Length: 404
Image (tube, rainbow, N blue to C red; front, side):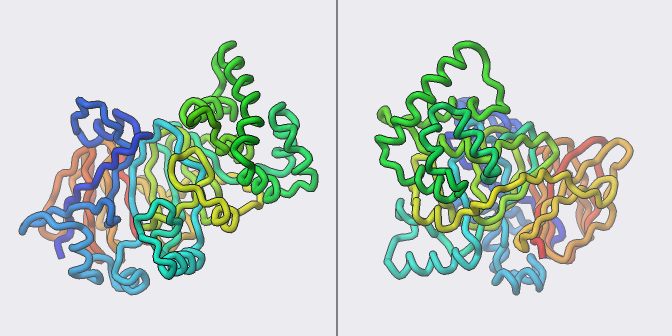
């Protein structure tokens, strides 16, 4: 097995993506100003990476299928049935993404089987389970990053319902401080009542914005954007309620956060590196034209208030910082080379590792051959291979592997 395998990822051009970060990272001209939302580095069926071998290019999925133990290592190949268990991404979030949550592994297996037995096509718009996997995620911010993450405390929600005039009609629903009852009430409201509650909020936000800029640390800022982006045919999106009920979290560059099953969340703005289990299972709660399955969403949400834990990262050595999570599917680390620390010697992993060079350039040496990888390069180091990584100055890389 070749010790170092260059990869080419796949860009996804979703309309919420930015126009500059990924084209600059990949040295790809973008004269049409297309949105470059995500760079995928993995074996997902909607965009598998391509491996460059001496004999020619081959999809990463095919390369792994030809020798899962040789690429992934015996433990990972056996545990994940010969498949790469993660999808590695770079995201540029220009417009907020949908309110969403993901199932546990067991729930995904049950739901996937149930929809299969009903004969619902995998590509059907109304399908909730597109595979039998969970979808935990970890991210590290590459720029200042904003997101929603988990329900606020009961005290904070009660204060919000009191302080936001439009929401005072919801106070009686929350008298018992039952977050699930409140959220279920909101998600099951007829659209006419959603419009009636949100219309005065929109008027207040319009007036507030006219008086001066709204700080991003206020839910009002993001609700104002949501009114602009997601009002359809005069109707307001019920996802706007979630902006006020969830924790609004700021992640500075270099820090991260983990999103486990059932925790509601939404990316709002910024660029990040994301590592997730290889799945498409998403339950949505608004701010999207995609399918919203309210009963399934309510069944799987974690309604316990969440105290967001910003991941600082753990220094393994002067170059490597790891971002630990409980997920067996993945492990994310950051490699920061400086003028003082320019070499990482004899790195060996028991499983496959995918690297991306975010800035600078590195020389990567295996047992037989060396490669120079500039900014935007992606490469795979299969299991049990030993490599040296050296820079001639500052360079930043991220590395993804299984978390077993």
